[in-house]
Length: 475
Image (cartoon, rainbow, N blue to C red; front, side, top):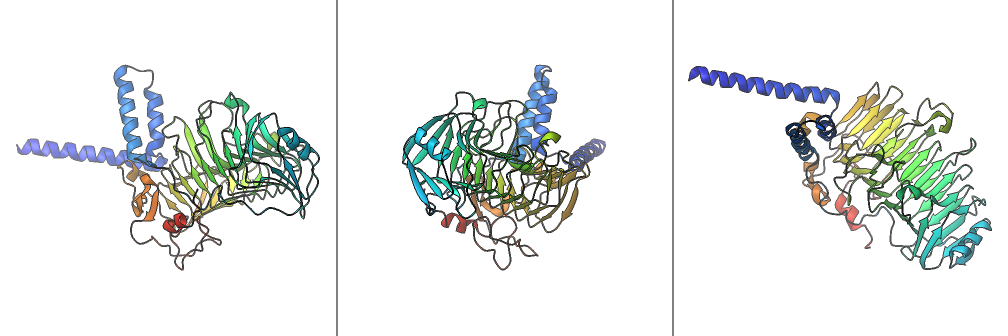
């Protein structure tokens, strides 16, 4: 009996040692369970029934350990995304339009200071609406609905609004892709070339591949844009091999993307890789702040990889880069006070992104933060990450005070950062106890909810999520 007990103890030690070794290896390689699961499915596919079945069971177990039962309930109303209150009407020459043809004429003849207001109703547009006449800094051209939710424009076209001139502003509109095939509904807005100082505020956009496409034309780029307080989503996975990224910015600089909701951007064709928002192509000084990015909310469990926010995206062909070289994909970007959740891949991805600052973000149910390639460098401080922060292929990290979860703990089903909240599965992000507070100060500016930080700031994107829900307008 003593020999048997000794043998069993030795086997137990060997097993524990093997498991510890495997976890240490996966930790060193930066492989989260949600990344290993699809790899196992791929490697065991096409073999005999036993091997395929074992692969499916192991992959499912890994996903359960890593992802759990996140987002059983929809997000509550928040003071970000499109709001039910109308923005104040801009002063100027108001032009009321009640048909698609009237809208085309108003756009084609627009002059600085015009306020083109769609009367309440649904407009079905075949083809693109062109905004090609310049406004002025002191007298932009505004396209709007008087009240949110009263005007829906349904586009059956590759591009909805094509904006190629400066100082255009779009407000309070609902835009929907209405194409038979997803390949044919590319963009709600294509902002191109000389369309600097573009503004989109308080709009609801749905069922496009890239709701905002921003890029240069003939060496000219539409800089200094603002995308603020919009809701971007899709009602189904996009059946396309074309890029699926609600905010797809290439080469333009000094853009701010603030207080938007971006959700359900699933790519069902091609490589099945999609992003919530990225800036790349030699862009500079992009700011992503106070956004809520939910890779999956209504569209749970679809195959493929979804990334939340990125500087660099999947890279850019040199002819499309601002400098025609793309020595770096992005320089001096800031991601601040964003909530990123429900992603099958990393929540934040830096690809050849130099001088990035990643501060005060809450990142839940993702594979964490990845800084990749020697041309990437990032300072990270004040982030609450349900996962890990890692560098790959020479990426440079400067870590301040962050809360993270080592990868090896994810393989044991441990999520200490989620445990700080009442119930992440029900989107109840109130603190379970006292807020976990930082040793240093928060970055300048309000938190996700638009409120000032407390005297001792909490980790992550918000000081008090209960106040965030309280401040939201009813919808």
